[in-house]
Every structure is written in C-alpha cells, then in structure tokens.
Length: 511
Image 1 (cartoon, rainbow, N blue to C red):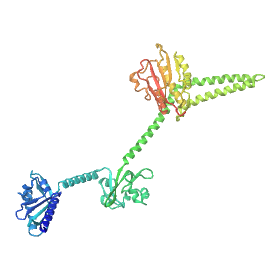
Image 2: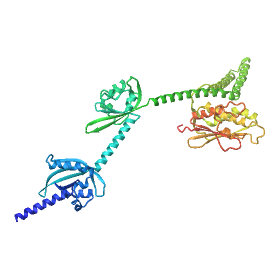
Image 3: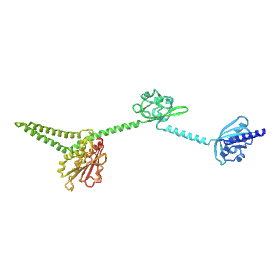
Image 4: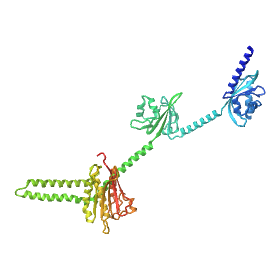
C-alpha cells in the first residue's frame, strides 16, 4: 500500500510538471547529447515551428537552424559537452516547417533527461521584440530628424537649469557652438531683465507646464553671443521620468514678424494721415460746390439784421423813442446775428479737421432744413422736392453738419442730373423709413438721365466724376462720413428711370 501511494504521488507530480511545461509561452526542446535527435518539445514549440509532436521527434535542431548557422550552433554545443560552460545563450534564426524564418534567443544547458544526458533548450521568439525595436529605432530617427531640421530652436534643460542638448537651429540663432553651451545655465540665453525676474526660483522659470513665458512688457527676448537681443516666442514643456524632471524649450525667432508688424503699423499710420489730408482737401473742395447754397442761407439773416437795424435807427431818432419796441428790435438783431454765426461755424467745420460729434437729432427736421437750403436752386430748374418723413421720428445720434453735407450733396447731384428740359417727371423724392429694427434708411430718388453701368462701380471713387465741371469728391466724402457713423451710402441697382441713393444710420436704442 505504501509503495502504490508513492507511485501515485510521483505520477501526479509528473502530470503537473508536464502541464506547466506545455503552458509555457516560450518554446522548450529536449534533444540527445550525441545524435541531437529531439526527445521532447512542448506545445508552444510545436505551434511556433509548425510541426506536430511526432514530426519533431524525427528531427534535430540542425533541421530547424539555417545552414549558415549550423557550424556556430555545433561549436556552442561543444562548449557544453566539454564542460567549458554550464549554459550558452545566443541569438539565431529558426526555420519553420513552411520555410519561413523567425528570430530567436536560445538558452541551452546540458542536463539529465530520463536517466540520460541531454540538452534542454529554452527558446524565446524575438519577432515582436524585433518589430518593437525597429519601430523604436524608426521613431528615434524620425525624432532626430525633426530635432535637427526644425526651424525653431529646441533646447533640453535639466532640473537645475543646465543645458543638456540643443539642435542646430539654436546654434544658428544664438551664435554659440554646441561645445560652448552644453552644461551651461539657460540664463546665458536670456537678457538680464528677464533673468532677474526668475533667478530667485529657477524651477518656476522652467516649469510652466507648456505655457508660453512672457516678460514684464508682454514680450520675451533672447540674448545672442554678440550681446544683441531679439524677440522670441518661448514655450516650455516639462518631462518627468524615473531619472527626474527635465524641460524642453521651444524658441521661435519672431524678429521678422515684429519688423513686419512695425512696418504694417507705420504703413497704416501713413495711410491714416494721408486719408486725413485727403478728407480735409476734399472738404475744402466740396465747400466750393456748397458755397452758393450756404451763401443764400447766410444772406437771409444778414438781410434781416440790416432791416432791423434801419428800424432801430428810426426809433432812436424819434422825439419820444419807443424803448420797449427798440429792445424787441435789438433782440431780433441779436437772434439773426447768432443764426448767421452758426451757419459760418458749420461752414468752417466742413473745412477744418474734426472728429465726429454725435448728438441727438430729429432726422425729419434735419432733412426739411436741407430742402429749404436747396429749394431756390431746385425752383430755378423747375424741379419739385417731395419729402416723405417718418412719423414718429425715431431716436438717432449723428453729427448734424456731416449728415447735412451728405444729404445736401445728394440733392445737388439729383438737381444736376435733371438739368434738362425734356423730362416728363421733374421731381426729387426723399423718403425716410425704418428698414430694420436697428437701421434707419434715407432714400434720395431722382428721375434724371441716370448713371451708366460703366460708371456705377467707380461712382464712389475719389476724383471720379461724370460732370464736366465736377471735382469727383462729393460722393467719396459722403461715403466716408457714413462709414464714420457706422452707416453706409449705396447706389440702388435696378433703377431704369433716373437713380436712387440710400444712406443708412444706426438707431439709438439706448436713448
């Protein structure tokens, strides 16, 4: 009974061992010392080599090793046979039953198997390892190419702020060779003012978590070897490994961009100044076109002043002057004087440079005033001006004089366009309406000769005119005025009988 119990226990141990060996992820072979014939191969060996267990038992390791590796393989086995080594380890290539090859790492020992000396080989399939290594090499080559060919400066820095690596772009931008800069503090590449900002705590300077570092004035500057500084964009990334923290700086030289921005600002400033000169010149030129109408308006209060002055003189020369009536006459003289002064002030404001002065305006009253100024010229041409106001007048804020100038220019143009005797409809129609919730639109429509298609695209261009004696500045100025009011001036398309201009103004919703 005791004997049978020992045999059962031994069989159980053998069964457990066979299962463990068969479940190994590595290949395991046992082959004879002299003949090298396989005595055993585990499940993984059979699957990977592509042979059945029975087929493998008819083979030797020399049958699955390529011919050019056989001599090396035999010499390694000889070391074990002669007890010169207890174990040999090497890399080689195995050949599968289908002829395909795969890389392996082989560990062989001489041991005892079934009471005989035999070789035991544990084989690791290196296919996946080789692929991963190849991918790693390719990635490293790719990163090295990016690192070496990048236009931006790339600098690696350790936790103490010392430079450990840099790319060729860094050498070119800062003027240092790699030998001059490796192992040195990153502070040597930064101006003193930025260095002082961070030298109390270099880690704060270095570890910004990838954010862009900026100086006190919103810019960062690099410091070249020759002492000159240049503007840069700087980003820092922190890299943490089992060896500690390091930092990668990516630096872009933005000197050209800054120069381009400065040139653009200078160009814009020159453009603005030229526009101001043009606007002033245009206003001066436009005064010539408006002078006749404005002179008529000034003449009215001056005539009234003259009349009232004559009456006042007569009252003073009476034996018993009517003081109360005299005071009334003087008050009217004062009122007409102020009216004339206001007209002159508006005329001067057209000539002089000034910012848009917005004030609350009743658009209906403004247009009626312009129509009154234009009525004498229109009447002399047998032209009627019809006005369709908006009721009630919505709240708008604008420069009263400038908007007057725009509408007066449009009316004068309309009168000139109808200066012929063969028109059946001799009228100008001015309409005010609210075209949307926030927009007020004013339309000036005439029934004159119209504007040719070839002139429509150029009609708002400075110094372009269809009038023989025109200067070509009125519509250009008018459009600039409307744009300064966040509005617009446009020529309506599709009008076959005459022409129509529309101007828009934003409503003052906060009024």
